[in-house]
Length: 159
Image 1: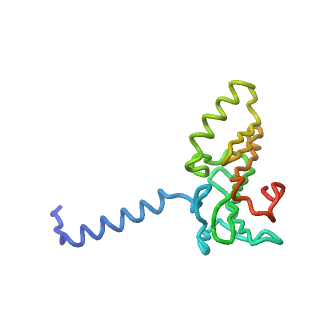
Image 2: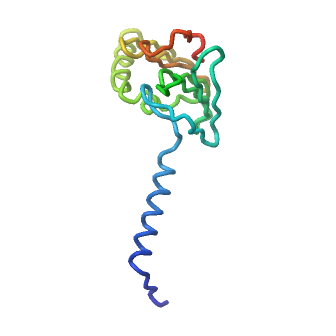
Image 3: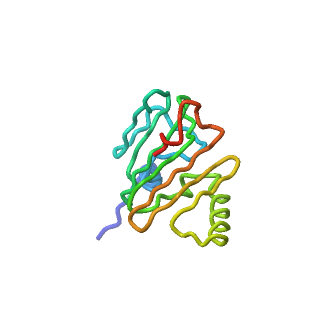
């Protein structure tokens, strides 16, 4: 079998296209992180977007790879101030919580050590609150930034 020679520019272009495609697939879903920005028009294939009635809050819903429905809440300016989830698997809280994840994990572990409660927790800090609970195949929860919660949104809206 003879060796096929390709032009160096073709090899580079092929490598760049491959890297971009790999990056797209590795990126997974299009969700941002708590405290991040929700782009006005970014709605991927498995996502829906609506406005919370009586508010300017945008709610973007998606289903993750485990079948869990995740609702992402953003102000009219795009600030993501909350997430809520419900489904058969726990969502990737590290990805959702972003810069708040490490402190949440530490407080949740501390709380578990003190109470022994495995199926429900509420980790409350000045800048972020995370409620999570459920049993295998039935998880629910929400996380929000209290200071960023719009005045016309109640905690009951975050579901």
